[in-house]
Length: 221
Ligand SMILES: [Zn+2]
Image (cartoon, rainbow, N blue to C red; front, side):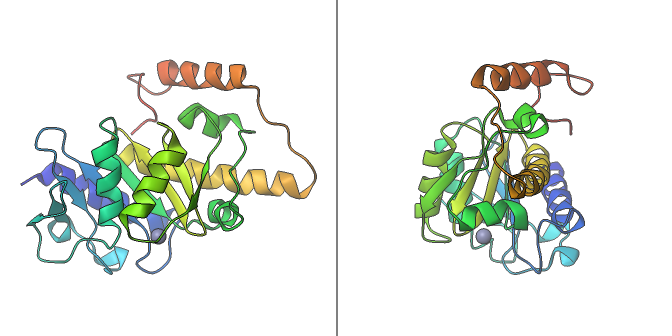
């Protein structure tokens, strides 16, 4: 079941080490099937290189395993909390990518100073309160901090990004890490100037209508 979604989620999990966003088996990507509402997610503790579409776990929104021989990711409860509270989200990516997580380590947001990330998420990257890892508490902290947006840092933990698909959520994670690195480097040289909200709104709207071949997507797949 859900063969296309399993392939997409598997492929996007493979993107994480390729993009240098994860080490070992840390980090995960999931996707939600719009018709059945079922969620495909990385199995727990499996190295990315070993992942195939057949090894993906399929769970319902209550966490019941519907298909897959391996235990789903330890972060499944977090992903499911977000899906239950964000009907607009169909893909979630979680990493501990170093530059973005260095902001999370300090409990700081990433200010909106660069248009390439503002294009995608339309705001700064907020940082949540501290939350217990792997628990619903983390899901709650993300939903609160994101305020309907597509990304949030979790204090003392890492990065969660969201999208209309697993592919979009992973693309946001990649651009977010690049923006975190560049912003960090700029901040080493002195104060940075945040873009005015009016310009952020304009950038976000413009990009959604003009980027890629079909427009009206957060990012190009
Ligand atoms: Zn984590």
